[in-house]
Image 1 (tube, rainbow, N blue to C red):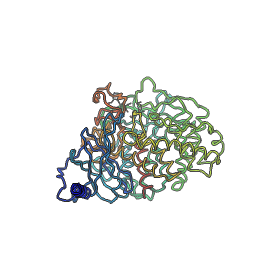
Image 2 (cartoon, rainbow, N blue to C red):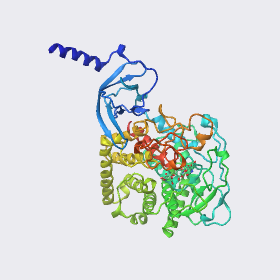
Image 3 (cartoon, protein in one colour):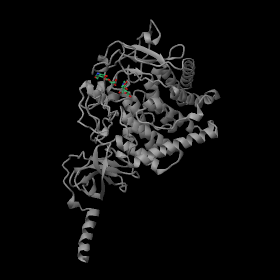
Image 4 (cartoon, rainbow, N blue to C red):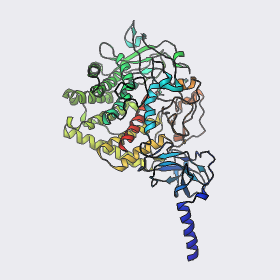
Length: 572
Ligand code: 9MR
Ligand code: 9MR
């Protein structure tokens, strides 16, 4: 007996510490049955890989990529049944691996995982990439090779004299409305979905000033002594400002009548129109512009004041016109960005105007007793506005009454606790269980809520949950892709993005977040094929036609940037 234990003990020792001669051959192929963050992990982070197999496997090793040496080994737990993903999984936890290095996870039956790194600032390149992506979305500017490398392209959509559609309330004339970013895979520009992402981008700058510095992004403005981040955000802000009518109201969008074909910007030359005017666009703009006033004040006080004036005017227009819904006119079929309930928009605009001006008339009008803290995936920007308002109030404790601060804090922490608890056990360690259009942004928006809780109370489980949301979009998910173009060893190659589809370059424009699994699969009606009986978390296809699962969009990249920036700053 004792001899048996002795032999067993030596085997265990051998296994635990590994030995060079046992290093398995690495033929350069990666197993997509091992899902992990394809970029990497901060040294102190929780590190979990999800392993898909029906067989009874029990051990894994971590191999250091250059030497081929086993540096860590552990037992695999499970199996677990994950309904949302429709699969049986096992978990390999290698949180104890904290030494910096480049690694792969190895399982005898499956082979090597995608490579990953463990190090400080591991997410910095993808953080910068997610912002540089906005430069590639710029309308009205040629992208020069110096900044855009192989994705250089000709100028498209100068938008210097855009016709008014009758829905705008104007019968004649043109609007000069240049600059801005293309919304998504399409070339239109929408006020609602310019303002909301700007709000998310501005929040990062307010909470972590100068988290991007001048020169970090190699854009045309680099070298002007202002953060490249603010330069990039100003390119969008400049455009939204042009969409304000003389009376203060905001036109809803600048768009062609129908979506363009899959062509380059300079070839997409159908007539563009200024369409609609309404309460959602006006209030969303008011919020973003009021916030812009705070963010730009230290750099350009004239611009900051202009933004604030514009915000006030848009708000006043909305008070006079509190229920002007936007619905696509009959001859327009592009993105609607519709909403029927403006409470969240009023809340967002008032919070931003209050924090900027400290004028009590805005604060007094907040429905303080009825603030709703429930998060529901699929509500998208329409409801997340309210959270954005709550975040800004919580950041400005000294400006609000204690009673309001305490109730906001309690409400937010309660929601964050529920979400963080869910991320511990939920499929792929994220908090969403309803996978709709743009679900990757839902995963990241829930992480934004938890991130605010972390700013209030530095609990490790909050940071863990936010990191796991990043792990999810970077590879620890039911399809085994890093959802950010150009980052990770298995990223999307065929996003629904006109430029990427038409430019003749194999690699798509980098730094863009695919929308992610969408169980509704609306594009099946256009012939997009998904596997039969596909599970919600697998309802995604890396196909150019899949606008319902594989498009990219401003309000999806914005929480990505926020989360990556937050993690870079908080993991210092
Ligand atoms: O290409 C369009 C994409 O940018 C939109 O987000 C999406 C949803 O509105 O629609 C896409 O256009 C499709 C249209 O809705 C239906 N016919 C096929 C189009 C895709 O080429
Ligand atoms: O994100 C939007 C999603 O919630 C809607 O269901 C969908 C269909 O109306 O539109 C999405 O937004 C698209 C917008 O309408 C046009 N530009 C691309 C956006 C992302 O697909």
